[in-house]
Image (cartoon, rainbow, N blue to C red):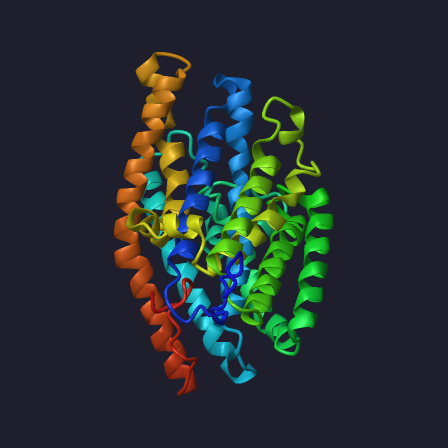
Length: 386
């Protein structure tokens, strides 16, 4: 019996996200930490060594990984979504994001009312737009309050369009899925050269929407292909991680890392799609590492951490300056960042348990009550049942 990359004589297993995929949940947590490091650098950019600051700021690319991952998971879990069930899908998605957004904004508003503002932008007329996560589309509005929820507003647009996308993807076979993926990859790369790093208006929709489309086509192809065996998954994981490293850290001392139009940085969503495709098979060495419980837990609370960390940073950064009696050094910044991360994780554990999970359950209950019958209860990484 022959052996090799494709696992020898064992028949290939079909791809499925019908169960919990721990590596895909864990990679979401790592992306959240990546964004966290970018915001640490952005808060203290003027006082950090230039090369280090430039390198850390590139962590904003974690948002791009988020969108590829979201498209991949939704296309995999909701591949059989029918028009009669679109309403249920939209209700569940709304309850996936609005409860946490409202809770964090309520916390920020309470801090402002009792006088805890420090470096945070508190513009009360803008609050309704942040509650709806539409602040990026309102001319003249400033990115105060949570700020990072601009990307969640873009994701809501992706959710709104997703059922129509599924209608098209349901009709493609394996060859058609390959063609669709190549076309989506070319479109994403082309758009990233122009809008990479955008978080206002239509440019932000193009940036993140193309990445969501790329992930959805990759997820569609995965459903039509056998699960990758360990050897092939390992090779694809290594290639994808190498491409990510080249795209984000290959020239920390050069200005291309700060230039949003860099051709190398535009390849990051493509590398992310390859990595997610490999991890979805849950058979390679990187996937085995990502099954570890601490990383899995980090992925579970990643949405809460993403939403909470920025308000914590803006309200506590002054402590680093007070502690140092002036511009803080790297040691102080590291201690401050570690403290913010610890506090953010602790609060994220609470909001995940008492805001996110109940919100998903309410979404499932409301969607079921409105339709009388619903989607199969699939426990994928983005399933409301988690």
